[in-house]
Amino acid sequence: MIEYSTAGESHGKALIALVQGVPSGVALTPDMIARDLARRQLGYGRGGRMKIERDEGEILSGVRFGLTIGSPITVLIKNRDWENWRIEMSVEAPAVPPKPLTKARPGHADLPGALKTGQGDIRNVLERSSARETAARVAAGGVAKALLAELGIKVVSHVVAIGGIRSNERRPLPGDLDEVDSSPVRCLDEEASARMVEAIDSAGNDGDTVGGIFEIITYGCPPGLGDYSSWERRLDSRVAGALMSIQAIKGVEIGDGFSLAAMRGSQAHDEIFYALQKGYYRESNRAGGIEGGLTNGEPVVARAAMKPIPTLAKPLRTVDISTKKAATAFKERADVCAVPAAAVVGEAVVALELANAIVEKFGGDCLEDIMAAWKQYIGRINKA
Ligand code: EPS
Image (cartoon, rainbow, N blue to C red; front, top):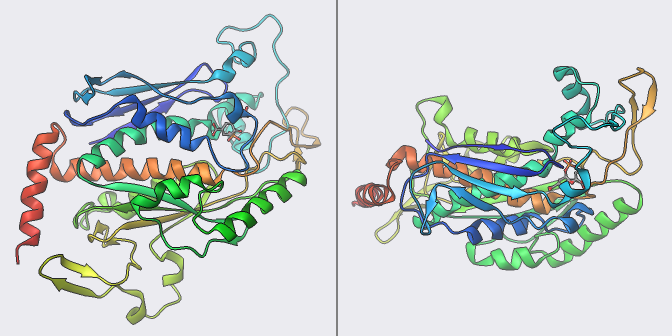
C-alpha cells in the first residue's frame, strides 16, 4: 500500500513529504518533482509569497542512481521565507515573544483549530492549516506520477471556472498539458481565460478573493482499479476524499456528478460497445471512468470546487478570542486566487490514489513484477 504524509509549517524552516510503499525500480529524478512544484507556484492571482519561494524538492531517501529502491522516499522543500520568520517561528522561545494573533478569519481553520487545540495564538493553527502544505503533497504526487508513467498512465488538469466564469473548451489530452500550463489561469478557452483574469483583478482591487472549479483527468487506466465489494476500496470515494482534503475545497464530483441527478437513467449511463482492436469501449463518459467503485477503462474524470480564499485584504467581522469582543479579522499576505495552483495539487493527490490502486492490484514490491502482472491481466481482459 502506498501511504504518504507531510510535515512542516508555512513559515517554518521546510516542508517534508514522506511516501512509503513505492516499489523498487521506478525511474525517479529530482527534476520530475521540481517540474510540478514550479507549476504549483504559478497561476494568475498568486500573492507575494510565490515571488520569494523557489520550490524544488530535494530527495533525501529511497532513490539511488535514478531508481526507487523500495524504501521510504522523503522529499525536503525549503521555505526561503523562513529567513524572514526566524524569530516568529523559532523553535526556542524568543526573548520578546511576538504578539499573538487573536482575530480569527471566518472560513479558515483559525477559530475551530484554536478551540480544539486550546491555543490562544492563532498562528499555531494557521501555520499548519495553510495551503503552503500542498507543496509537500505535490512532491509526494511526483513520486506517484513516476510510477504511473512506467505504465503509461498520465494525469492532467485544467481550470473549468474562476469567479463564476466558465470555460467552454474541451477536456485537455496529455499532449495539451503545455498549452494548459501556458495559460495564466491554466484554461484552454482563451476568451474565458481573459475574463477570468479580469475577475481576479477586479476582486483584488476590491480587497476580495475568488474561487473556482478545476478538473483532473487520468488517461490510461485499465478497467478494474479500485473495487466494488468493500466501501473503503471504492476508487471514487478515495479520489473524492483526496480532492476534498485539499485546503479550500468544498465540493467534488466524479464525471457528470451532480448533473446526473436531474437526468433519466436512459440518458445518464454510458452504453457499452465492443470492437476487435480496442475491446470494450464507450461513446460517452458521464460516469467519469468509474462504475461501481472501479475504473471501467475510460478516462477517470473528477472535478473539485474551491471556495474563495478566506484571507481578505478587507476583512470580515469576527470575534477576538482573547476578549470575546467584536473585531475585524486579521490580515495576512495571501493570494487573490489559487485555483490554477490547486489544480496541480489535485493532479498530485489523484495520482497518489491511482498509484495506490495499482500496487493493490498488481503488487507493491518490484516494478518488474508489476509489469508482468499488468501484462498478464491486460492480456486476459482483452481476450475475445
Ligand atoms: C501558499 C498558500 C497560501 C499562501 C502562503 C503560501 O497559504 P494560506 O492557506 O495560508 O493562505 O498565502 O503564503 C503565505 C502564507 C505568505 O506568507 O504569503 C502556498 O501555496 O505556498
